[in-house]
Image 1 (tube, rainbow, N blue to C red):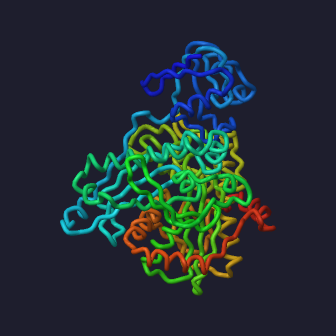
Image 2 (cartoon, rainbow, N blue to C red):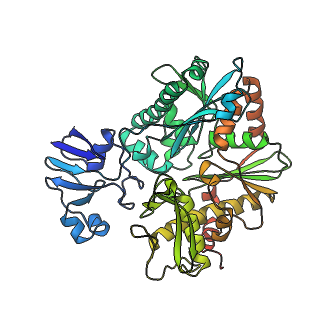
Image 3 (cartoon, one colour):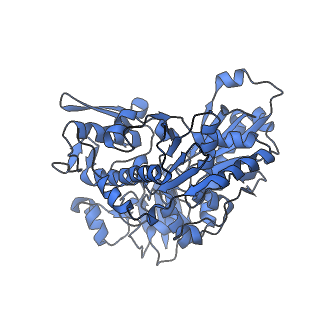
Amino acid sequence: MKLRVECRGENFEIQAAPGAKLLDYLQHSGVPVNAACGGKGTCHKCRVRVQSGFLGITPVDRRAFREAELASGWRLSCQAIPRSNLEILLPNAESLKSRPRVLRNDSALASLSSKSELILACDLGSTGVVVAIAEKGSTRSLIEAHLLNKQVPFGSDVMTRLHSAQKLGTEPLRKAIHQTIEACIQALKESAPELMERTSGKSMFCAGNSAMTSFLHEWKIDSLAVSPFQPERRESSSSSLPDGQTLESLPLMAGFVGGDTVAGILAIESRAVQAPWMLVDIGTNTEIVICNEKNEYWFSSAPAGPAFEGGNIHHGMRAETGAIAEARWKSGKWELETIGKDIPRGICGSGLMDILSEAVQHGLIHPDGLVPGGSLQLSDQVVLLADDVREFQLAKGATRTAAELLIERSGTKPRKIYLAGTFAQHLNLDSIRRVGLLPPDIPCEAIGNASLQGALLWASMPKTLQQAFWSRLETGRNPVELALQDDFQSRFVAHLDFPSP
């Protein structure tokens, strides 16, 4: 059976034996399909259009498409089982030729000494990966390469990727993350060959959550994918890329609180902030840590899902050209700011936060999440559905509940909440407060990519200091498993509503 695929002007052919779902064929062939829900048929992002051949209509297809769309060949690839040759159009995928985006810090490069020792670090994000070169001892990158994590076709969050790994094995996901890092390294070699030459033979230190770290080293994920959700190991580990580049991961705290959180703690403590403080890394899996005056670290992870990054939102998208990133409701109409000043093509996480904040404040959405009429028309092409609002409420409820439970279990009210991650850096803090994402009476500060900052600091530390820091974290660690808290569900339900304006 032949499957001919057109994706963003690129054409290729897949030879396949009948019996599996179309999404499986595409993923096995390395096609970057956007399947945010992991193939459950709920996100409707893995859609394809049949141009030649036959694909039967499934009950899920009938819920996802109008009759006219079904008649013109639209299907969900996660539901379709091809029986004969097909020609399909795949509109919602990353370009197969996508290249890393390279950012140079010209002021840092201008002051760089030829004698300075350089280090390599990597922020191993679920959505995006950053590889950076910096001077030893500095958290200021000289140059960075950014690229979408090539694991995204296997699911938009860690749980859907773990489920994919259970079906496909861990090798495809290891290969995907290695390819992502390799592409970033190659981009740096092309953009700054002299800097890369000065890092030759040195390890790259990678900060990622427990799932990303497990895929990086191809650990077994049996115990991480099911309760009690524990990685195969937690200590700092190393492996290599095919070209011999050594990858060293930061240690993991527990469960889904991984090396990126360890890096975030290191980044905050390097600022000499006064305890108690709270670290919140907002994402598909939101990690939260409280440090009190006794150097005790109370931490947990909230299964927020991909809504904060535009996933499982009907017109959701990542923060790229055309994404609504800011929104205001003025004089009875929406004023929208998009990335790249393009026409609105979708909604990214910061835009979603603004839209909901404004809509609740002006009565377009009720505090309980009810959307009169079922949707908000944001532009000619972009709408926000009632289901999108509910998706955000679930993510918000999990995050707010986790933060409050940690405050109560630790008996500590933080002086300040530090918001980590590039996503948080672009959020409107007023919008965060108005949608009720975090406790309202604690000041917040966005600190940027703390995972990368901490990875750079870790890379600068001798082994003895790394071990001493990790030993201190281990001595003071107090994990809080949300699923085991008797009052989690009742609090979660209570926090689904938006604060009344």
